[in-house]
Structures are given as C-alpha cells and as structure tokens.
Amino acid sequence: MNKNFGETIHLDLRSGVPIYLQIIEQIKQQFAAGKLKPGDQLPTVRALALELRVNFNTIARAYRILDEAGVISTQQGRGTYILEMPPPEMIENIRHEAVEALTQRYLTDAARLGVSPEELTKLLRAAPTRQDQAADWQPVMDDNSNPDH
Amino acid sequence: MNKNFGETIHLDLRSGVPIYLQIIEQIKQQFAAGKLKPGDQLPTVRALALELRVNFNTIARAYRILDEAGVISTQQGRGTYILEMPPPEMIENIRHEAVEALTQRYLTDAARLGVSPEELTKLLRAAPTRQDQAADWQPVMDDNSNPDH
DNA sequence: ATAGGAATTGTATCATTGTATGATTGTACT
DNA sequence: AGTACAATCATACAATGATACAATTCCTAT
Image (cartoon, rainbow over all chains, first blue to last red; front, top):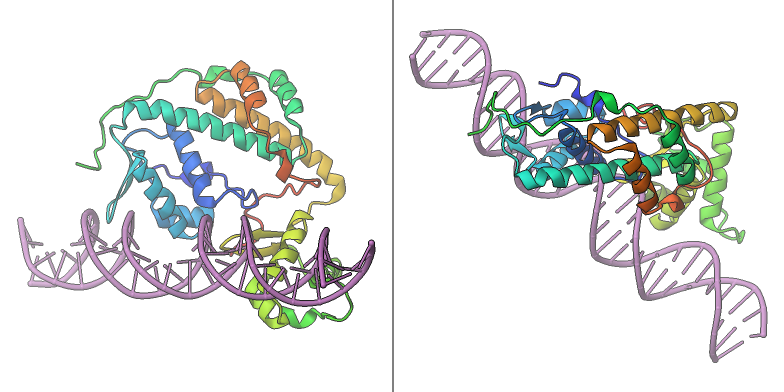
C-alpha cells in the first residue's frame, strides 16, 4: 500500500494554511498527477498521522472531506481507497485545482523566502525543462484491486 | 513546557508601558539570554493570561507580534513555540538553494499535471499576489524540527 | 469450518488551542 | 466637555488534540 506515502506529503506548519487543507491539496495533486491511481489504498489515518506527526483526527478530517468530494472512499474498519470511478468531469476539475494550489503554494513559499514573482518567472525560464519525464498521461481507470462494492 | 514560566514575567501595570509590549520585551530577553531555546513551547495564551491576570487576547497580541517578528511560531490548535533560527550567514545560502529546489519541484509537479512552463509563467502573472503576509525576514526552517513531540 | 475475541480501521464528541472582530476603557489633546 | 486613538476586554469561531466508540478484519482454539 504506498509504503512511504507520508514522505510525499510536505507540511508547512508556519504557512497559516490548515494542516488538513494541505493534506487535501496534496492528495488531490497526486491523484491528478497519476501518482495515486484508482483502487490505491491510502495509509490509515493513524499511520499517516504518525508519519506526519499530527493528530490522527486531522488526517481523518482530510479523508472525510476528500470522501465527500468523491475522490476517495473511506470505510470504517477497512481503510481508505482512491475511488474506482471518479466522475470524469471531476478529474479535469481536480487537475485545475491542483495546478492552482501548486502555483499558490509556490508563490507563498517563494514570498516567504523574499523572492518576488518577477524573479520567479525569470527562474522558470532559466530552469532546465524536465517535461520529458512526466509529460503525458491520461487518467487510467483500470480495475485491479477492488476495495468497495 | 516551562511549568511556571509566568513567574518569570514581571509586569508593571503602572509603568505606562503597554502590557503586550512588556511581554514581548521579556520574552525576547529570555530568548536572547538562552532561557528560552528553539523548540521550547510557551504557555497557552489562556494559561499565561491567567497567571499574569490579564486578558488572553493581550497575550495573543504579544504572541502574534513575536510571530511576525520571527521569534516564535504560533499554530492554531497546537500551541506556540520558539522558532529555530538559522545562523544569519547561512541564510543567503539556504535561501538560494531553497528557491531553486522550490522552482524545480514546481516545474516537475506541474509537468506531471500536463502544464507547460509557458502556461506557468502566465499563471504566475495572473495569480493573486499574496506577498503581503510574508514579511521581511526569512525563517527557512523545516517543520519537523520544532514544535511537536 | 467456525465461533469468538483481539486487533485494526474509521467515527463521534468534546476539550483545548490560537484567531477574528467589535465593544469598552483609558489617556492625551483641543 | 468632546474627540481621537491605543490598549484591553468579551464573544464567537476555526483548527487541532484526546478519548471513547463502532465496524470490519484477523487469528486462534475448538
């Protein structure tokens, strides 16, 4: 099950952004980016809480909201899984949100470091483009493991 | 957590100096004197307010200002902690590396989402600038090091 | 194979923490 | 007195934490 999933979540306790929102955003991003696929099991609320050094209720809150948003399926006593058949129009939606959240966080993080948006655009152009590795993917709905029915 | 921290704060209500300023000064002094070390948890706003017999909003005000000054880190629902502050001569170094890492991660994440660097520059210009909140100095510390557990 | 209890999972509820906003108080200056 | 402003207080709220609970799975003794 995504052994060290926790390491892929990066919290900024000083950003002022609630922890549960940061978790929601990043899970959505990973889903939109294809790192999390339908059927994948997420860590238990307690396991992830332990890794992130946060109360497990905070994880549970993030999971509950993602569940209501139709991204994941939480099942008492069983675990939480990425939904098998997310509404197709939601995927593009989530993708947009993910990009926006990513940009927003990039901006605020950079601002905290004292870098202006203008400098950032320069940096972006200067930076070696790494599109090659991840460019094209399509949300694949394969049906292997099947948590819910 | 600094059991009787309140006893180390001495208020002079007749001095004409605002209470919140007296608290700020004394916390800064204790930090400079090494009595308060990075990672130390300060009393809650209510606990300290009780000890000092003042309104807890006054404590909150002092904490907020110390937070903006980069001395402490206040986290809703968690508590307030003395910040880890990087040595001044390292700041520039760290800052540079941090910005680069930030940019690199932004690019790869975005690429994973199927967004081209050209689009990103547009997004950056379009995005609502939130620089206001991120003030003047550069904390640059990672989160796991300080407050909790 | 199966009944039953332990272990593991998410849930519900309330306590504790800092935050936001506006009212009240006090002080200085006309 | 009246006005203006800063400091403090009161109240409601949002985020996180602690604890007890319910649903499911897993394992073991029979």
